[in-house]
Image (cartoon, rainbow, N blue to C red; front, side, top):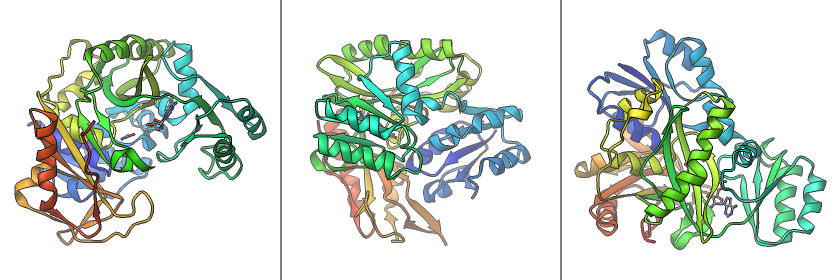
Length: 415
Ligand code: AMP
Ligand code: GLY
């Protein structure tokens, strides 16, 4: 079987590594891939990102399955296009991908189907939004409607910060159209959890839970990033939290997917806030998380390709996903300066004994030399029977990876 895998992050390196374990897989083309997928077993990078060119590649190269990593091609309708050309592809349709692509669409969906979420209002007019802020209690959360590369959410402690956020999103248009419409939302206090899951539109099976560490500095301080490391399972997701989630969030989402008639055979990722009043849904993503994937797939005992195929055949109802016991921690090694500006192009050395525990992200392979090429350069995975053992396993490997300006958090997995 030849697979086309779309994306270039650590998530895609982990997906390629896991898919390659299936004996039926002969080749995985990764578009565009990174320095990790360039070296991975059975993988070859192809330098294509345009959807029409990807389609042509799939048609001309006997691709039997396409797996889409990031949200961008999904919201642009890659799934609809591939299907219209008779190709098998794993991911939601363009319409279903609006659950991630538009915050107002997803909030309205949650409200319509009774999915537990923060109170909110949608604004199209900046004057109305600015007026509304006069009567709010603070803190409050302001979200750009469209995709803003993870930067479209402002937690505003007071009215002045909120007025500034509305102005920069709606009037200064800092997200180039993504903030024309905004959602203003109740601030929720609690701890976060990521629950990735797979659906075929009739059944949703949750994966093992995960805990991202979004801020750049230890102790959850500093700017938000794409994620600096993940612990799985998430210790806050107890059996009680899980059944609350299934009843008030997951099952209601599934009713909505069915009622709306969404063509959704793919990943649905629930971003939760666990509060004293139960769990609330902050957002949907319609793809795997990065770096959640690196920890979650490391603990997945079952074969990922078979699970994806079961989803495409509408057979998740008879599928069971098996997980390894214990814990997994992945620590992201970033370029110093990220999420602000940083220098690229430094040589990366990785000692052989830990090669199987490294997923590359912002790294390229040129003339057989790995070089830094992004903010989040790679992540190192550690496993163990307990969280402490998993942390120790990950952290002891960090000095076996060297590059200039290496930066990482010391508290990944600590709760
Ligand atoms: P989102 O893209 O909606 O997940 O928001 C990004 C991050 O902003 C989340 O991971 C939370 O840390 C924070 N956030 C979003 N919505 C809220 C909310 N209503 N209350 C508190 N924090 C929030
Ligand atoms: N790590 C969070 C995300 O992938 O959205």
